[in-house]
Length: 220
Image (tube, rainbow, N blue to C red; front, side):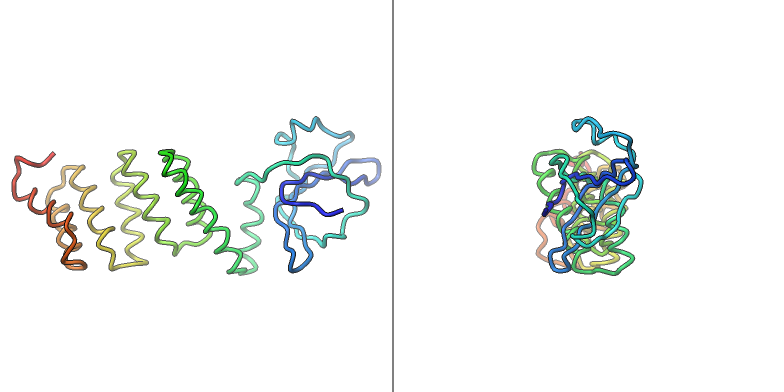
């Protein structure tokens, strides 16, 4: 029997039910990456599988490695269930899979941002960054979400981290300046608008905001 991602199946060993959930299917190596639940005396309520106790968060096994597996129910893989799989990717330095997972989280975050679900988007971007710390686009987008939530200093911290990876970003410098402007630190704001213009002399918003800083009555 072939399983797909999210499938929960069981085997019976010594009169106990051993349930597993398929996290990922590696077709190239004919392998399942699964999460294992604690053995049980009887099968649980199918609608309460999310409440089962996890025995092991990840192990890879050949598709034929289970004896007489039986599909229990179809399900989805939740983000928090993938932590063991992600650690496995890091330990094995499986760069292609790491980038693929990080990109998936990034796009999910982008979609949530479009829906104005900023807290959920921040969580997705954070997962992408955890897997692939040099993904500065995720850092920038997480910072923009924090700006939308009025968390100015946190946004500044993210933009600064992004600049350590991608130092010539007029957008990041301008956005830091905008955050400082919101915090009332006009001197720091002006410095970052100038840095943005040093990177991109045609950055119109930086020109506009610098002009506003020269007219204190226009500062909001």
